[in-house]
Length: 435
Ligand code: IMP
Image 1 (cartoon, rainbow, N blue to C red):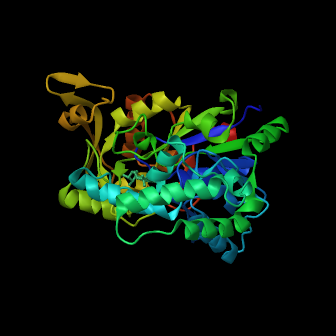
Image 2 (cartoon, rainbow, N blue to C red):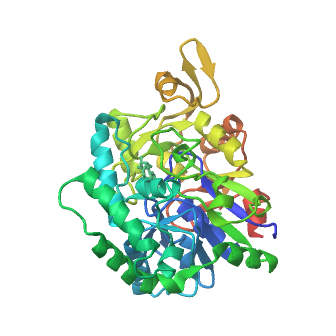
């Protein structure tokens, strides 16, 4: 496998601005590959003033000549995929021939969404606040060995495995969900109709990536969600159902560990999360509301208002260790413009204990009180700045302090939604990748 591959991962609860960073780095890579999640993700990219929101297809598709890969670790809703392909075509971008989906990827079916809604209702106050896209139940079926993969659609024979599996799954759905029953024959028919469009996109992705690497073509691995939504390392059970950390790359694409290369963590200059679950540095009240408005913090997939809070170094240190970060990209710095002071959580206090590492237990985390340092804000804007030395001195100090408390080097700073509103620090890790 060639070196020179890079993974981009979220260090918080998703929505860190990975889409923009992937978009910026893509010109230096031949392939962009997604390894987990589904259309719960929402990557917003602005190109020449045009806004693209991609959920399933890697944002590399916006770059001519770049191959995009959806790995076996991704769960694919055919309807959502077709909607995205149609939208790209309307914009003059043809995915066919550049987009490849693993034959081992699992399919999201209508009953997954029904089962998820019922499960969320049953949880009451403990609901996860999922994106309601059927992601969790699809991964449950995968682990439960009753999922349906792309390869099963290719293999279908009358009265074969596919029909049996769908019938059993729909029967289980009709029992748990109640209401109007689904007919498994309709589900099967619609799926086989979808296969007509899926077939030309389906490939042996592991082999494709291996061949690309043999030919020294560089791969950019695109993580969805963020470390704190990772099913193993996040704020369980308030997480998504896959491994968005860099560890998910090998299993989710069928590539060996040595293929992963270096890792860039993306962190927002403050924190956000959508849905329920612990969020130690959360800001409520009018101040939180104002920050949400200035950051336009509304979910790219569901439009839900995002919860907002101060930067939490416990979270980002957790992410740095788990992902083995080589550098950090700091996004949305401009959203903090005009604040008189800015807080950074350096550690938690839990009873009489000082915690510098993220606790695993939800109850412990709920008892943790964030301990803050207060830094001066800046009065001249960072918005649109493109050179590090043009940032106000207080903004540079803020970044330097984030570097100290996270133990990471900030290679890239985003100062606006446009591709060009970005500072790539000279001689940094990111500058090296792009050179
Ligand atoms: P699910 O992934 O739809 O099962 O949702 C599980 C949790 O992850 C919920 O809190 C969602 O809001 C959150 N989530 C899933 N995908 C994203 C994302 O791309 N950005 C931010 N939050 C997400």
